[in-house]
Image (cartoon, rainbow, N blue to C red; front, side, top):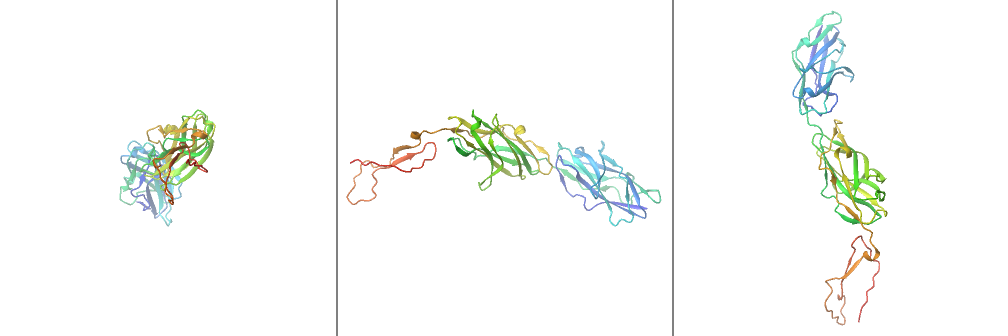
Length: 362
């Protein structure tokens, strides 16, 4: 009998692996039996490279995805398996076996390559002859290098366009508070799973209602995401369950908005913050499923809004404009002659002028 053992065309070429990845394919090999059926009883691979220490749960997998065996590399990078499979002489296609491994979550950038260095590291037994068979190909059989790249990174910052400090009146709806930017690093897309925000500065949280989270597009359009909360918790927190995928090197801008009811005490100042990256944000790499801790200058807090309930006589200020002529002489037949000019100022909220009366003194 005879066996030919080669690197398969499906073996990954210049592939990359992220920390925390599972069952990354390191190599794919072809086994072809000739003359008689042959049992592959043992095979030993050698792992080399600066990231070998990050490879764990190394497995041998058949073409159907079935894991034949798993093992851990020893101190020299050798890992052995006892697959105990038969290579059929009548098989039309070669028997394909893949070498896979998990990459440790804390793996540093580096590389891993797999190989079978010597023919004696492949134990083959002819089923008819009951003799040991030496694989009839050149050794070592080398696979391509797999590169371990940096894991996902994620940062949060306060957007420069976060709303300015201003006066708001009771019964205002969907007041925009803080606007935050969520940025994914270059390694992979990041999924923002949970975001908890904290309302600060107000004594009566019951007056903060219908809290929502909106995504801001590049065109400045707002789109509500996640659920709307009727009220904040007793200590001022709101937690949004999300599934926001932020592309690698991309930014997603989110703004927190809420209604202000008339039970909020006048003079209260209200702000929104992300207090702590670990407690308030849950995110993971979209490809690796590796959790990632957000970086940022926490706590991230927007500007404070002041609640003010205007009285009727405070809602509108009227004054003489500087455009009013000092002395005005109107000639007979003149039209559209300016005799007075007034300024109407709404100091707190928009005011609609429905009717006004001027008195002309003679």
